[in-house]
Image 1 (cartoon, rainbow, N blue to C red):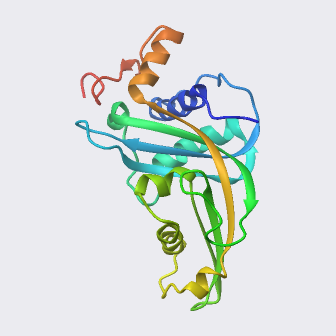
Image 2 (image 1 turned 90 degrees about the vertical axis):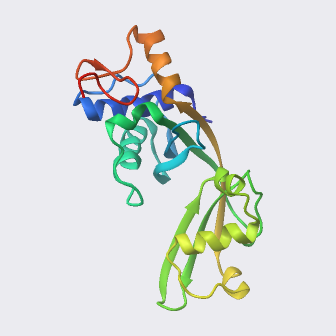
Length: 217
């Protein structure tokens, strides 16, 4: 089984840095595989709790090299909930890569464990007779301190359902649970990795990335 690794997080940072510099990212230091995956960016300033800046991935299995490169950029630049990440934010970022595994059909909307399982819900919106779906990664409910019901109700809202949430509707949900392996890396750890393994600090257009700004900017 493929598990999330340091090198995958490095590759996502490489992809984002290369986007700003216009260069091609260095080749990945991990083997190809085929798995569902997600890339999450968070930003922490002044020692604060990291805040979400973007999270996008795929629930369908795909090649992880092209997948991480694509979703590193998509989650950083095209998550509609947030403005695109700017190059000056790089030193304050942390990246979490997730490899999703162990897909199972849950018996009902309560048949999963907080902190262990991610969820995919699918249901028909009774007000508009349309299909809706949404997912949360395994760490979301535990981080938010949610109960099973709070998680399910939040997922239904995330899916776009604005009507009354009843227990009858909850029982009609099709729930798929899954697990994941993940690896989180802060920009400082990425910079140290690059310096150790490539002999120089990360750069944009030949200028090192220092304290959020390129020299001269």
